[in-house]
Amino acid sequence: MTQIHEAGHAANAPSGAPDPGQSLLEVSNLSVRFASVRAVDNVGFSVKRGETLGLVGESGSGKSTAGRAILQITPPTAGSVRFDGVEIAGMPEKQMRPYRRRMQMIFQDPRSSLDSKMRVSQIIGEPLEIHHIGTRAERRERVAELLQLVGLNPTVGVRYPHQFSGGQAQRIAIARALALDPDFLVADEPISALDVSIQAQVVNLLLEIKQTMKLSMIFIAHDLAVVRYISDKIAVMYLGKIVELADKTAFYANPLHPYSQALLSAVPVPDPKRERTRSRVVLSGDMPNPDNPPSGCRFHTRCPLRTMKDNPAICAEEEPLLTGESSGHAVACHFAER
Image: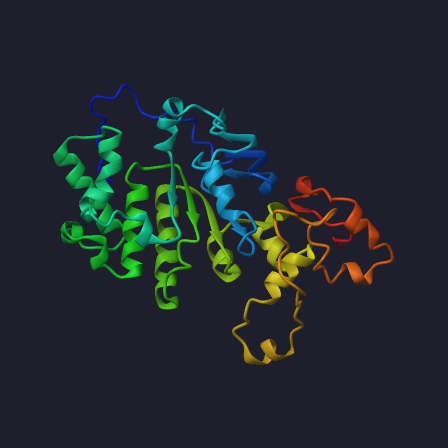
């Protein structure tokens, strides 16, 4: 892609050595509270360079809040977020600014994330202006290049967001997120607001861009079939907690947590015979109020496994720890069978 240079700014954003095996992002004990609501509670994981972590769970599980807290859009209440070896949790905005060039977000609703009063070329070019990157001519060239990258004709830059379909608007949002050539993306349910016919196009686009630009990514979604396609590692959240964390292959071959098993059993199988005969894990009730989560294991009020065990009281009395990370497949459950 075209290289444009910073004008009027001292130096580029800090950058480490591009070691593929090194963790670009390390999150530990991350918590976010809104009054008495523990939206994110002691969450931890890492993302390597070029790796995609799929973050899944029901609405209200804390996925989006975790993503926003990592980018310091929503200030964390506690915990550590290390990006490229540097602690950014609680970092003052002036110091955080260079890192914002390297960490970008694709929001769930492209309509609300794009300024309706700005032309598309202005929307995509705005990050370049804010960070004083390139001349006007170089910025125009970069915008045209980004539009082509996401599959749009550069001539559409004169239009306004309302003149595009949902899928096209999301492509524009992706182009804006890529304007600063970031190392890391948080894609917050980037396809949930789109028609099914468009979802595959956007997912394929993200996968292509990830491979071309060697991006690291957190992909937040409900759809486990989509997450399987684009992710390298899976983290399952429930009521603000990570209950399972594993390599994609291990997770889909052998989900350990009963909540993960229920989520996977709800994914349709593209084979009518298998779909009719396979067993389903049906959860009872709704997710509890995050303002007053259950004691012990937060999932115990809906857990089908608990009723089958000899000592179910432990589930309500003792919170299970996320264990097994050294083996590559961690789970937080008293009765999970490895």
